[in-house]
Image 1 (cartoon, helix red, strand yellow):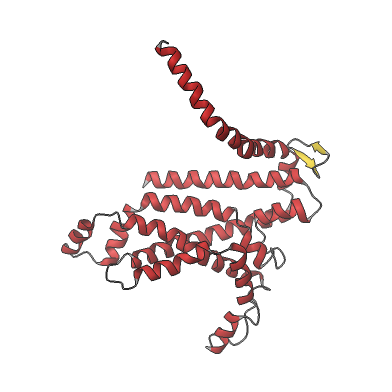
Image 2 (cartoon, rainbow, N blue to C red):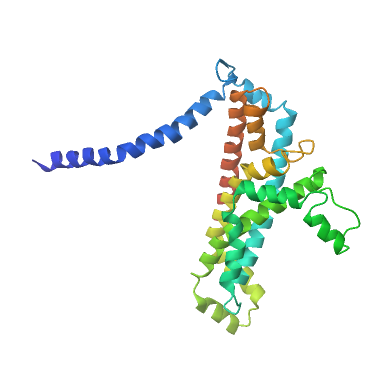
Length: 292
C-alpha cells in the first residue's frame, strides 16, 4: 500500500472516530441556530407558521415592551458589570496578600455563591428583601432607615435588588480568574517596585491591572454576555415587575413563548437581538483592549 492510500485510510479512520461527536454538535447546536434564524422570519404558534419576512424585525421598533426590556437589560449591563469587575479585582488583590490569615477560608466563602442553585438563592433573596424581611429588619434595628424600603414593590429598588443579587452571585466567579492570574505574576516585579518606593495602591493600578488586562478582557466579555442573558434572578425574584421595571430580554422571550399568546417567530427575533448586542459589545471590548 502506497503512502497516498495509507494517508487516505488514516483520514477515513479519523473521521469515523469524530463523526459521532460532529453529528451530535450539528444536531444539538448547528440545527437549532439555523432553525431559529429561519423561524425569526415567520409568525405563529408553532403548528402553523406564516412567512413574514422582515416583519418581526420591523415590529421591534414599535414594541414598547421590547424597548422596556432592552433598556432594563442595558441598564443592568452598564451598572452591574463594572461594579462586579472592580469588586472582583479589589477582593482578589486582598486575598492574594501573603500577610492575610485564613486566606483559603475567605476565598471559599466568596466563591461559594457561584456553586449554589440559581433558583434556591433567588428565592432566598426574595425572602430577605421582602417588606418585613431580614434586610429591612436589620436596617430598622440599626436605625439606618426609619421605614421599610419597598425592595420588590418599587421600580428603582427592585432594580437595586437584582443588581445586588447578581453581584453577590458572580463576583466570586470573576475573583477566581483574577486570583489565579495574580499568582502567576513574578514576585520580583513587586519587590523592585517596593524598593523604588511605589505604594501598594500604585502597584495595583500601574502593575497588577495592566498585567491582568487579558483576563480582565475575558471576564468583561463573559460578564457582558451573561448579563444580556439575565433570566433566573429576574424570573424568581421580581418576575419582571413591578410594572415591567425589571423585565429583561430573556424573560421577554420566555413570556412571548410560554406566557403570552405564543409567537415563536417573534421570540426568535428577540433572541437574535441578544446575539447581535453580545457580538457588538464583545468586538468593542476587544478593540478597546487592543488600542490600549
